[in-house]
Length: 80
Image 1 (cartoon, one colour):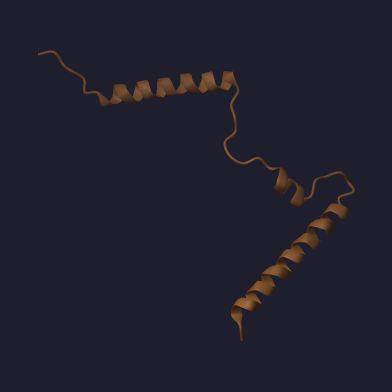
Image 2: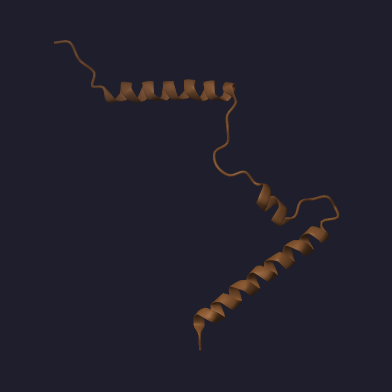
């Protein structure tokens, strides 16, 4: 029994079945909604971009955050 040959044949069969499923989904989408295969191909990956206003808002928010963190970490000097 050649396991590698059997595995190879199964992988090929899986590929054929996947193509058949995708073509059937494409034919079945008569209502105008994208199919699972279509949405999977068009999804954007990675980080979302920010517009300049959102970037400024995040910058201001983080500056205040770090200012408070630094103030909490520095030991207060008391006068003798």
